[in-house]
Structure formats: structure tokens, C-alpha cells
Image (cartoon, rainbow, N blue to C red; front, side, top):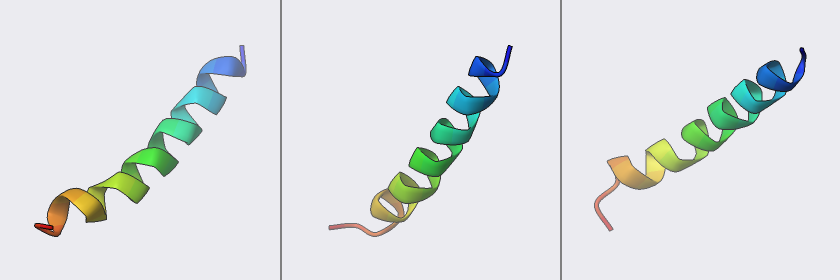
Length: 26
């Protein structure tokens, strides 16, 4: 099943996009 791979990839991209936001105290 390639569905798990796609979900994992999207989760990784979202995590990389959100991490900087959490790192910088707004």
C-alpha cells in the first residue's frame, strides 16, 4: 500500500513547515 508512504510524506512536509513557527516565539 503506497497510501501510508504518501501520508508519511505529507506529515513530514507539514512538520517541517510548522516547526519553525513553533521555534519562533511570536
